[in-house]
Image 1 (spheres, rainbow, N blue to C red):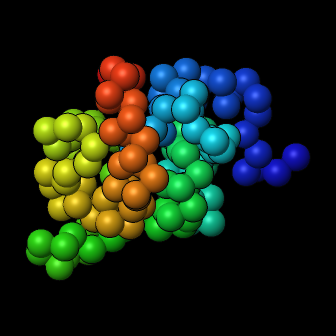
Image 2: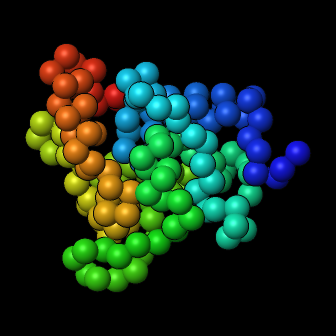
Length: 141
């Protein structure tokens, strides 16, 4: 068995901990057309371990954009900063919703870089957020 493989039991633990939401864009698995992944926050190829403190539930869009990245450029300072780490940082310290909860706004260099690298405000997500907000299903918490 590969060291990358996440057991079904560990996957359930990670999904429950994340309340079945992407830990980056907060999309809800229930409303997704694609299954969510358990991803390595620090990629395995960069020494990340397959253990709960290094795993996050991620929608396919965020997972695909993140890939093996761990840093990005803050568009304000042009500095290279680490991406948001769901096990070590709080979402609300790095991000906030706009008034109609359709856009995620970065509060910190890490938040802004993560929004850019993971494309947290993809058109499809914005449309889904607006629709879910109109029926009181968004934001998830």
